[in-house]
Structure formats: C-alpha cells, structure tokens
Image 1 (cartoon, helix red, strand yellow):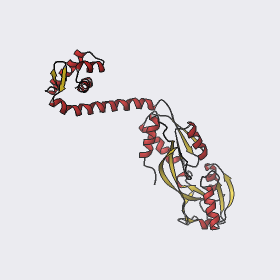
Image 2: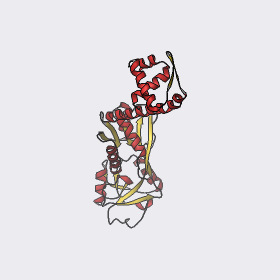
Image 3: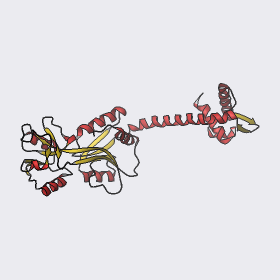
Image 4: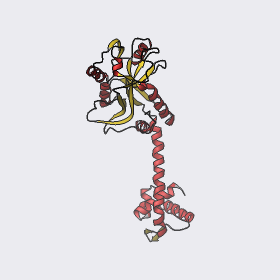
Length: 292
C-alpha cells in the first residue's frame, strides 16, 4: 500500500468521479484508476462500484475509508513535524531573563531543551523586569523568565514555572550559624548586605519596618555575584532566592516568621505567533521537572 494509492482513493471518494479525482491529484485518469485497481487487488475486495462514469463506494470501501483517512492524516502530521524540525534551526530563540533569577536550574532546563532539539540556538539576555516587558512588547524578545509579582498588565500570557523561597545566607562561623531557621526578628542589628536589584526588596524592607527590625547595610550592589562574595567575606548577611546561590561555601537558612517566596514564570506577548523553535521551548518549559 502506497501513499499515492491512498491519496487517489480519498480523492475519488470525495468527488465520486475518477476524472475529477485525477485532476485534483495532478495525474492522468488512467494512472489513477490503475493505482486504485492495484490497491483493490492487494486488499482483495473492490473499494468502488463502477456505474459508467459514475462511481460509488462499496460496503468494503466505506469500512476502509476511516482507516485510510487516518493513515493520510498521520502521514501529513509526520511531514509537518519533519518540516518544523528543519525550521527550528533557522532563527535563534531570544530569551530574556530577569537579573535576579538564578542561572543554575535555568541552565539545566536549557541544556535539556538543546539535547531534545539539537542545533537550536538560544540567545539569553539579562535585564530588569521593566526592560524585559518593554523588549517583549517591541518584539526584541520572544520569551522572558521573571517574577511577575505585581502583575504585568494586559497583553501578556503567563506560564508559572516554580515557586522559590527566600533564604538568609551567612558566612561560616556567623553567630546565627547554629540555627536551623532564622526569624526576621533574629536579624535586627545584624550587619547586612543589600541586594539593590531584588524586585521584592521594597516589600521586605517594609516588613522589617513594620516589625521594628533594624538593618544597617554595610555593602550595596545590584550584582548578585558581588552580594554573595561580600557575604562570604563576612560583610554581613543577605536575603537571597534559594535557587540563586552559587557559592557552595555560603551557609543557607530558611527565613521564617515571616516566610517570603516568589513565583518564577515564563512570559510572552498574548496572541503573537510562535516560531517552531519558540513553541518547542514553551512546551519543554511546561513539561520540565522544575524544583519545588
């Protein structure tokens, strides 16, 4: 059974006329009827009854028609997948990432995506929340990974990826190192390293003020690597998303009373069509085993 034979049978079943079916398939009528007769011989029963120029599906033809349609549909789907696979490699995926999102787990996801879709290019750029939103709207980015804490307004589609707790990072030997968890009140008066780029900084500072927790910043920076380096150098403690810690020497303790967490999401502009590569990245993100 060949795909051309199935194509000719389906066209003939639709038109009930071999001449019209041959024209729609861009073949001669003798070639079409010969192919159908060959298929009927292989199957051992006629698919059509011939009544002069008019044809009708036989009982056997009607029973076979759904199966032939399914074979053709699956063949077309396979062809589309093959074409899309080649299209995957034509345009890099432009992915924006909020600067406070830890790269370790994100890199594991991207590594799996590249393994599943070998040869696809991904261009990652880092920026603030507002800059990522603007670049998405302008079409400079296909997707962004960020924390939409205060909402993004209309026009964006949000796919939540994982929840992430805020922790306290301290150097070895710190006075709070013996505690399994650290209350916010325990940090009052402690030397502090201030993460200026943190999108939840104002909220945390507001909670500290409400609870009478006094923090004195010994060092401030918008760079995550500098913050962690300064904590390790005993400049003070810092609040940090748990999946953003990259220095294994740092001690990590859960922040409790109150606990603070954030949601990391993948964002795109609503209604904007995806390229095959971007569509594959979105599907991969939805099925990936994210932490938590």
